Length: 254
Image (cartoon, rainbow, N blue to C red; front, side, top):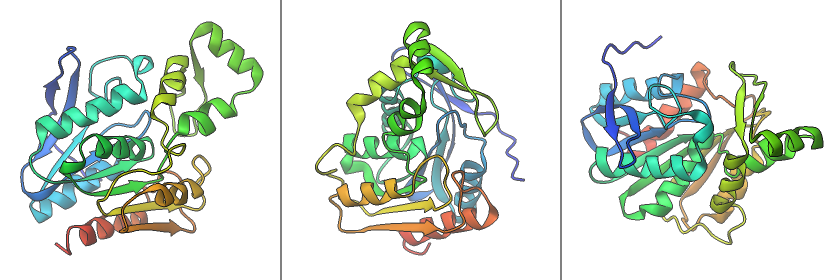
């Protein structure tokens, strides 16, 4: 287990939201990790990358979205658009020069939205279990009519999760996410190198989503890496080794 002693620093946004983060100075391109839905920056992938970048002298940032981890705000108030804006703020205010964004699950969706917003800052993208547009097929489409009616009435409901605490699902999250859907677009004008790692045993996000994203990307340098026995979290030792090996290749074998 990787243990970090320092307490997170805080970035205050214009609306008063404070985002908790850890930042490590080092060589460029830097690396920014974007976590998943309900996850925080203390997870295995985030801390493994932090330790890996520290060992290699690579600049690195990990942070919590609002309503997640040590950041301020209520989870139920979060939306894809808001969390994407926070990711852009982290890129703008906490990093310099070109960056490789590493996004896990929902973080891969936000990674792509950030790259579309700041194309000139992107040296590469590395997505894990890419959950683009998940608010449809993973949330709304899995609700039966009774739960949909309840969500419409109550605006926020709680659903069981296989990963610990129940999911808090807000109607506003699902409705607002429609503005940020990517698979409906003819093309994603991202020209940087992209690597997408996906477990074929992912019971939450079908691995074909990564193939769909790859087809949409304008970049000619796109690879999809399928892990036959991999699940959604991709947090086993062999998954983490694949993650760091792939990132190392993107950094030119550093």
